[in-house]
Length: 126
Image (cartoon, rainbow, N blue to C red):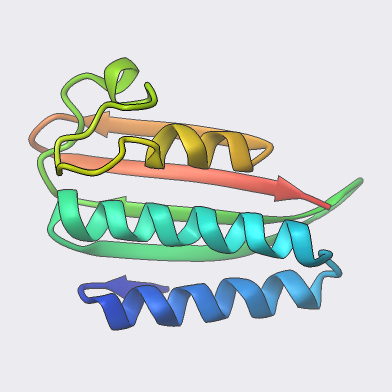
């Protein structure tokens, strides 16, 4: 479990993701994709959710993958479809984060309840 309450926490999460990705044999491109995805999700939790936590899991079965779960108890996402569109931002950013993260990963699921929480689960398979 990784707390997400500061930029230093985001850096620690990035390092852990890279280490796990290397450990399961991801190449440099896949390492970069999962680290970028984790960083974006962690920053979203920090900026929009007021902080949260992340969990990393290695998935093994027919395939091997890395699952990243980021959750916060912030205000949630009132319009998820809009939030996934490129160019939409509530923090004066480029608006590429959530949709871009979805494109970097093989599986991507967002659960949110406005005023209660947001949870994003993303998986990249080897």
